[in-house]
Image (cartoon, rainbow, N blue to C red; front, side, top):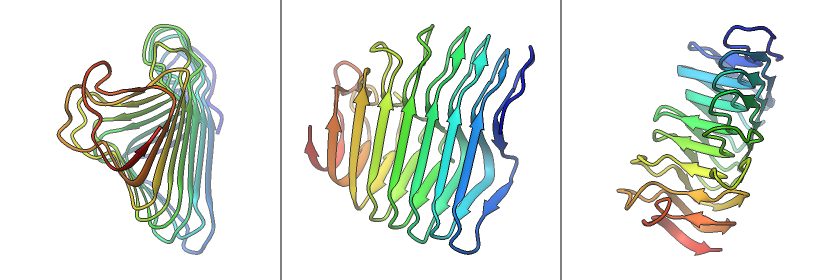
Length: 239
């Protein structure tokens, strides 16, 4: 999808929401691409939203790729996943990527998972998330953001996070400061690569492990509690 141009709001490349269900009954794959247009506010590349909305494949896997547009105000997120379930319960792999656009205001991360009803679930498949921010103006230009208890779960697959911030002021990978759940759980391994900015974990001492895996490997700078705090995890750890 390609967002429109103009001076209004919500020039979105691809929007799937309002209890829509996208599913494959066989082993087919699902691929979603979107490029945001230009306008005042909310030039999302891909926006997947509202509880009850579901993307579901049956072994074929799911690929999502969003490119944020140009907003004169706020919000030019590459891929924004808000209040929905993305699932493959028959071993399919997920690839979720996004590149933030440009704003005259704030908020242009590459990939943003938001709210506790956002769940990315697969059985044995691997999950790869790649988020890149390019906007150097103002605030909230992270590579990948996990906000408000959003979760990723794989029974035995590996989870690979690759985040790139627009500059070192912002986090390459950010776990929301008030998260109260384990954001990423897998019986496989987690590898997180933070480019340009750091990997930020919740403020202070979180109530739960932020991640849970057999092996946890981090490349780049890790900022527990943002400055001083603890990064709780389950599993082996390597940097």
